[in-house]
Figure 1: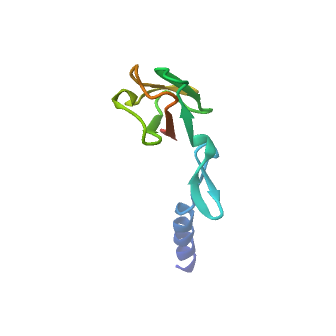
Figure 2: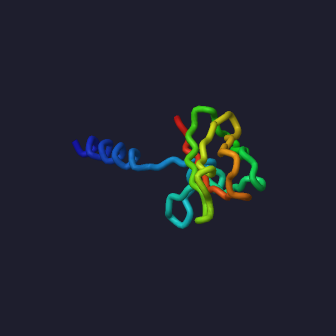
Figure 3: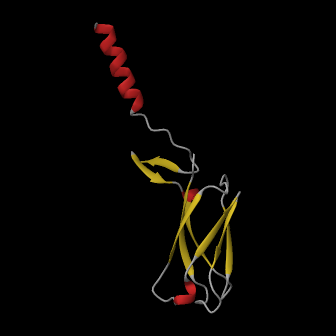
Length: 110
């Protein structure tokens, strides 16, 4: 019976172990944080209507979340994204803010 308790305890402790992949999450100072390769900032070149960002390890079924950065943008700066293997492409309508910057987060689907 005593050994059975150890086996049960070991299985509970094992289930608490968090595995991370450096392309998604890392442990920094005992804190689980998003890796630099899983998030970032980028900007459109002047008033371009599309922009691409390379993401190593990304697949077309992964998810990208975008937000515009700053307070100076207009209705033509509504962002939408297409995910591809190894990169994603961000689009907006013509007439957008010149050099609009945006933040992105990559969520890997397993």
